[in-house]
Image (cartoon, rainbow, N blue to C red; front, side, top):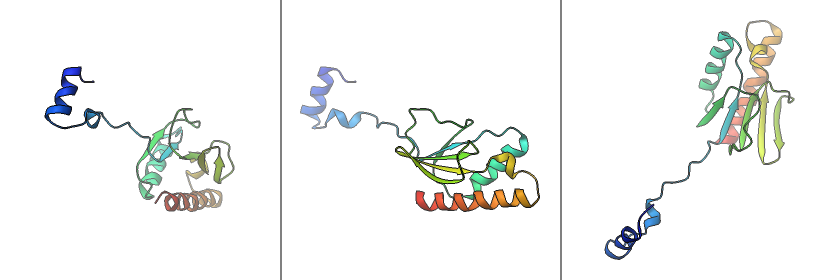
Length: 129
């Protein structure tokens, strides 16, 4: 990053450690959100859900499988094949809520899916804080 002359100047003249000028390593947010909205209604519902729960900083990907090298300790997946709730898989905590398609519209089953998702999201928000 610095030439040898610059390093000597920083150390000897300014009394500063050149390592202090290295950029901090980027860290992954604490939460990775995996959702694949297939319709405009699903995309709108996802936006409303994510805005209504205090999740802090998160990264969202339109996929149901995370990249292998992602560093987020918590993963929220809408659908995806896991049973609903909190799961400890390796060093990651997975939070599985109903698929977006199961929460669009109205009716008793839709209401039950939304209620289930809401309670899981509240538990996730509590754990993140």
